Length: 292
Image (tube, helix red, strand yellow):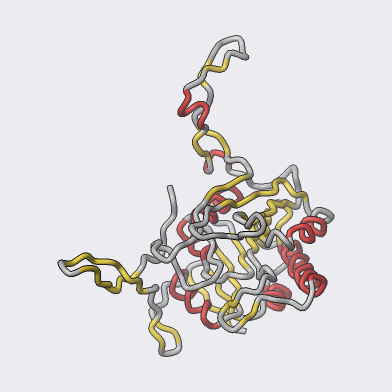
């Protein structure tokens, strides 16, 4: 295990379950965001995301779920993502330990063909859970979205004593539409399941306050910590893969070099038209981008 720390942001290099057991005190975390391996066969650097059975996978998952619950403050919140296949197992397990406030669907469009012989999956489920349903953080005014009825159709609500326009802003429902991270996007990192900063922005704004501590036990591209940093929260990140640790050191701690290796953002090919056709130019992507 290795530990890196700067300005309220901690990165652990090692196994998530062991580090949570050894390093994270009871009831010390305000917000936990968990985006674990989904058991669907993806390749993450040196790790193949596939267990021999659903039982083996869920037995492993239940251990870190229990650890996340242990370290969560009494007023804390946990968001738990999973595949559509595994979420029923997680839902049944978590509902006996926490209050599930919302079952969120993160919907995204796809530019390619998802399936030809069945209805392809175009969403990922998220559980929004709290320890105490009477005492938890939810900053509704920080995550308002456009209410189409009030903002666009300009209808009048006649149900009260005095007619009034419908609200033009509202708290988002439980179906969230955010684009998946694509190669041409500024926030892109080389990772097979990078989550968009806009998704984490909504979660962190809603369920934490400035100065709170946000934990991500499977950090990957360290989007959680990057957004937490931009929004004035502290963060604890855990990652097992050497390849992805370097992303966190650069993206969150601002390190330029690690063990003699320069840490640089992904260099992207940019199309530039010329008189004879199209050529490509290397261009570095930005480190951060949060939606308004």
